[in-house]
Amino acid sequence: MHPITLTPAGTIIPPSELILNPDGSVYHIALRPENLGDIVLVVGDQGRVELISRHFSSVEHKVQNREFVAHTGLYNGERITALSTGIGTDNIDIVVNELDALVNIDLEARTPREKTRSLRIIRLGTCGALQEDIPVDTRIVSAYGVGLDNVLHYYAYEHTDAELRLLNALLHQTEWPDNLPVPYVAAGDKDLVSLLGTDNVVGITMTSGGFYAPQGRQLRALPSVDGLNERFTAFEHDGLRGTNFEMETSALYGLGGVLGHRCATVCTVVANRLRKEYSKDHHGAIDRMIEEVLHRVTAG
Image (tube, rainbow, N blue to C red; front, side, top):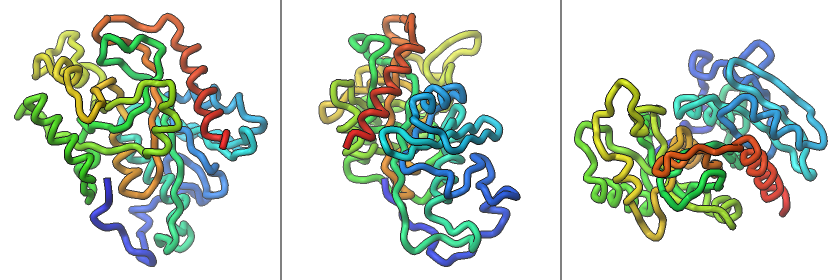
């Protein structure tokens, strides 16, 4: 995904658009530029931040504001920030824009910088598998995120050729229902996907705007489309399958592409939707995912 245009360097951004706290930190995630590591590991769950930072050799900075918790420290000589986003692409919209502001906007002058910096932003999440042969506790790395939400529709972007081909294949193979918004597709960073995907499942992730009917669950309220999950399970494109449901990747990849950041998602499967199974030790599986990602992103 690419931007059609970006705000030019030197443009003054008003206080109502770029909100700063009294200490100069950005409004929601409450970080200042010097608090940010070279690698950012984002998680939905606040409690997962400490699961990451307990592996650090040292922690230099901690902050919490609402659901946004950040710990910055050292692991294997690399400066890393672990940051919770809360659930959903709406929160990813906040987090990625504010991370970008920390490195690509002069906060005192309120102007985009001439020279931009690309962050490595890696999501460590949980998901539900859409393929019967993907067991619980497996790790899935997202080559693409399919946006079933609406966040990127509000940005000036264009798909790459590969993303557009995947989107057209999805609309055709699923006979996309007219009553649902048209999805968007965003690719992860190829190098990070390759690094993290070794010995794990690599596939196409469906990013949902909700947890129940938007993921085909039925309690008392009924989904408006029958059999949508089965269509995602049957979907295949260029050797990749529709592998999993989660709630953040499409916006992470989309905004990362628009703003020039390198993004990847690794999710531990806590539920297999076809087998109707749930992990018996998802805490242990999540910790193994954290250890693997920390090792791989700092080994080189």
